Amino acid sequence: MPLVSMRQLLDEAAKGGYGVGAFNVNNMEQIQAIMEAARETKSPVIIQASRGARSYSQDRFLYHLMVAATELYPEIPVAMHQDHGNSVATCKSAIEQGFTSVMMDGSLMEDGKTPSSFEYNVKVTREVVELAHAKGVTVEGEIGTLGGIEDGHGAGGSGLEHLTDPDQAAEFVRQTGLDALAIAIGTSHGAYKFSSKPTGETLKMDRLIEIHKKLPGVHLVMHGSSSVPKDLQDVINQYGGKLKPTWGVPVEEIQLGIKNGVRKVNVDTDNRLAMTGAVRRVLAEQPEKFDPRDYMKPARDAMKKVVAQRMVQFGQAGHAGDYQPLPLSEMAKWYK
Ligand SMILES: [Zn+2]
Image 1 (cartoon, rainbow, N blue to C red):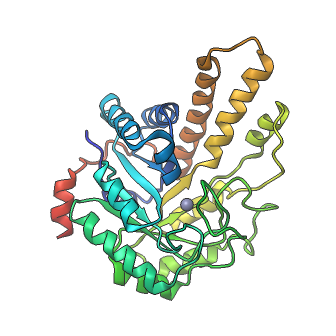
Image 2: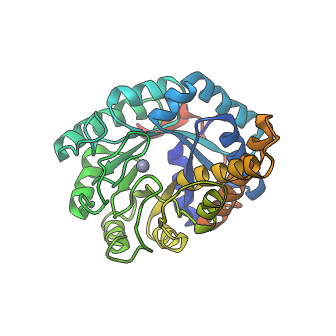
């Protein structure tokens, strides 16, 4: 099956009451890890690339790797998503390069750092919705801003500085007509999300529930939702790494989110940790090795394990064959 619309994946997830992990990639092994996990757990998937990933791997490499994934795993619906588009032009180029879904993050200005105004956010998001929907492509927007910085993108700070306001979120959805809404509830990008296990004071699940009550039909997106498990941190530090102690978003909080309208869950850091730990272990235990496959294969296996675990935890496992994905041309008609 060809790459599919993210909107359809999320609509189906809403019907089934589950969440779909959106995993970041920038190379072949990561795509293979996700597809193997999807096959093993029979899961639909969202694979996403940031601007940094697109420039690292180049759009054509990325696109053709994704097409290879759909050819080799024809039973798995796969949406290819631009993570944190910083401008209309970035989203437009993603659509031209074959992405089936884009995020217009108008919560920040084009520099990807400075928080923007509500009016600016509505204007750029609305513009992307118009050009994307005409081609059947899905649009995610963001209201409120996340904490932290990853791949050079983010406002920095703690994540509590610009929480999403529920009334503003409702107005934003009404004015833009987007498909999925990323909200700020205290999470941050990167490995250093919380300096201790998050509580209701630092991770505002009550805010998420309030937003869902106002917008029960809207697909919510949790960014910065790696759980940063201690065992993955430990492997890195055991083999010469120097990670400072850190806490992510506990899986049970994500599951509470999924019960309250979260349909897309962004996970990147956990996979980075798993791969790096596996590479470090091989290089430390077998210093005579020099074939990249000797450490890339365990790295790929380690990522696959984390992804498969998340697919089960988010509830998407078992749902790959539930529906017949529509071509983007059909989605374009549907939007009209
Ligand atoms: Zn994000």
